[in-house]
Length: 265
Image: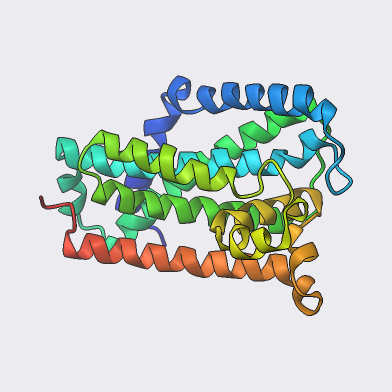
């Protein structure tokens, strides 16, 4: 049963971004209107279908991943760093909450923001192209896992950062480039075999984008590039690995809280 302290911390973190929709929800909505207008309508009209899908529809899952994980990471990293910067995180640390409850509350709230942004982007995409969900449960599970994963990574970022510029660097110059090279705007099938194996498949974002695309469209690049004997299970294997990675990152967050890394400077 959830403790009163956990509920209070979770509610505080959710209200922190819900009360500022102009800062948290409007920017991704506007940005993705531009993405769909430029990449989908203008460029998409000049690009052949990819894997049997109109180009604008093919890029929807990748844009959902980009917005969801970026916001989950940003929310957690900013919340932790801002709490350190203004020293009000000490109130949380001295509360009767366990370290696990603290970490889960921060991750859950940040994942909620990521999921809301993902829904907003899907709604924006729906204005440009019909969208139907092929594997609903798989899609929901994937979105929960990847937003929780990047919320957990955001906690690490918030503890490591020494100033606000560090947070910008992490999000804009590390996270986003990896996503853009994660098959958001193209299919792995369009790449040469060497690039697929030695570069793209080493990028964890490829598996996240592919998993959401499988849940939303029913198409997976991994089904096409994986060995035939394992292709059928590739999306589920990817989700399993992402889930294990999420648990590992959460365990790291709890350990960092327990030793006071970055919290007692």
